[in-house]
Length: 302
Length: 316
Image (cartoon, rainbow over all chains, first blue to last red; front, side, top):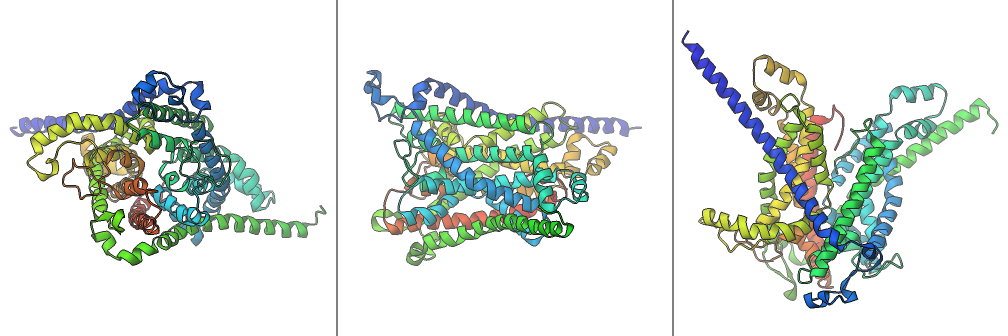
């Protein structure tokens, strides 16, 4: 038959097109991953020279000209102590607010999924999770900074708490929903009231998911910059009170990274970036350890 | 405790009520935050709303010295950079999603690459900003933009002196940042496509690509659209990375390689430069505009993605 030759040619053209498209898809994956390696490479190679023990025990340096730096003046070399203390203070405070509220909301989403409030709140939670963080910062600026008339750790922590809350709530919900219904039923059948069932059976079984959510939220909050610019501001020293401007590691990266005329400032920014990335890495590894295989699905997109 | 059955039953239902009230309050709190955001942002920008009215959005002068605050150029900057990011990021993000979900076509390395792309989302935006400013900006200025100008300079889009700190560079940084969003959500949507769709197509002798193109993508269309809109939301709201590289110029940008401003970078960069109440109110009003943009975008996107993945595991 004459059509066999034609058919064969069409067949091979289809195969070739299939290979081309699959090749393009693999190319897309490569293009997507390259920036990750480029960014990490630059952070490590540019950040390492900045890091020493002093980097974690000193406040940031003064702006220095090239000649001052080469003369080795002590004021040209510094660290990120104020940022480390400020970040820990604000992220810690934020977690104190966000964890109980977030876990509570997550329990509600998971245990009363059929209620109207659950639908509304869960939807709002998703919207809030993707909200531009700068608007959250401005909200706290109006609510707290303009009222107290000062940038403060409290204001910074409040904005970070709002950013952490949806992450904690969502991971709590997902991990509690993974607890088998049979476990709940067994507990209820023993006459244990619902609230006790939730606390003792459900939460203790879904615990690793809860911890994961909290770690993810902390990682996210530790890297947030924009809301802190409008709520916490900056101070060249470690915080000594809750109602004064407070530095943070990401703010140092922003502030010193844009100080292009002073090479010692840019070096400080790279060092701070490396410190932040290492902190994230530790958190992410802990997440992997906590969730293992079983909760692989819980890892929320952040 | 005396364990009379009746007392026990009474306390247990009371415990249930207390728990439900407590966690219900937390759920209400989530809603209250969003409502509070809208109220407080309106409140804080009232002075500016009263002074400029609609001219705030349509006017193009931003001059703190004369107390004139209009944001049209920055709205334009946000639209242009986000559009660029979508244009570049959608094909790449969708490609990644297909790679991760269509296991029959791509057997190797999907898990490792999947977590690498996830890691891309975990890098704080301020670090992308620093990298963009110090590594990407010179690269764009020296290599990419002169080339674009040589070959595409006849269009208005690339007709300017290459500067590096400009809308195009901001668009590229945004592209990197929205790829994980688009790919993660699209992957979930593609995973939610029933396998019978694929099997039916394969049984007709289709190639992998034909299955993806004709059976998977059409079925997932609305969800992918939702993922794209979510990516758009991230691009519109992204602040720090853009602030580093967009150039921070208040004039209307005349080309893609001219410096500009986005709404978000305007807030961060102008913040604290004055203590004038009107300028504060104007910056808060920029936040209010962003709030409304984000609300519309997210609402729309969530509704699309929800419809598609509600039946399966909820992930994002």
